[in-house]
Amino acid sequence: MSLVIAMDGPSGSGKSSASKGVAKALGLRYLDTGAMYRAMTWWMLQAGVPVEDAEAVAARAGEPVLVSGTDPAAPAITVDGTDVSAPIRGREVTNAVSAVSRVPAVRERLVALQREIIGEGGIVVEGRDIGTVVAPDAPVKVYLTASEQARAERRAKDLAADPAASVTVTQAEQARRDRLDSTRKASPLAKAADAHEIDSTEMDLGEVIEAVVRLAKEQE
Ligand code: DC
Image (spheres, rainbow, N blue to C red):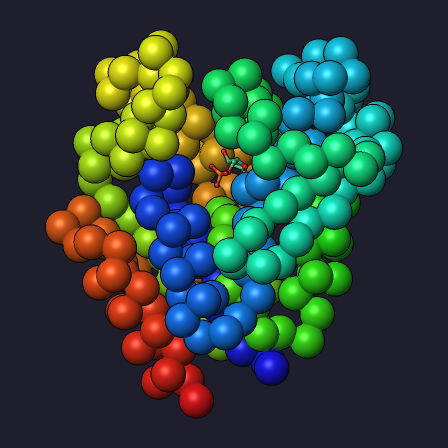
C-alpha cells in the first residue's frame, strides 16, 4: 500500500480525469488537493473575508473544518459539514483561489491535512506542489502539461453550462491563474527534478492513463 503517485501540472492539463482514471485502474485512493484550496476559498468568500488581503485570510485559515473523500468514483469535499463539490467549481471561487492559495498559513494547514490523508500510501494525489513539497518521496511523479489552447478548450467544455465561459474568456482567466500559481513565493507550481513530464496535447485520456499506469508498474 505504499504507492503514492504525485500528479502535478497547470489547470486544464487533464490532471483530474487522468488521476481518477489511474486510481480506478490500480485500485488506489484519490486526493484532489485543488479542491481543498477551492473549499478554503469558498469558505473565505462565504465568511466575507477580503481574499486579496493575505493577512485577513491567514487570520481565519484555521477555522473551516475540511473533510476530503478519497474515492475516485465519487470524490467529495465538505466544509463544516456542507457538501461544496458543486459551488467550488464556479467562476467566483475559480477566480479567487490563487489569492487564497498563495497565503503561507493556508498552505501549511492544507499540506498538513494532505500528508495525514496520504498516510501510508496507496493513493493518487493531484495538485501543483505534490512532487516538490507535499510528498517529495513519492515513488512516481508526473508533471502533466498541454498547450495553452488545448487547456482552455478543455476548461471551457467543463464550464459549458456557464454562458460567460467562452474559450477566449476562459483562456485569459486561466493564463492569469497559471501566472499567479507559478510565480507566488510559497510552493509555486513547479516540475520536480525527478518527475516524468507528459504532454497531453495530442493524447486522449486513455493514453494518458495508460502512460501513468506504465510508470507505476515500472516501480513495482
Ligand atoms: O487544480 P485546481 O484548478 O482545482 O486548483 C485550484 C487552485 O488551487 C489552483 O489555481 C492553485 C491552487 N492549488 C495549489 O496552490 N496547490 C495545490 N497543490 C493544488 C491547487
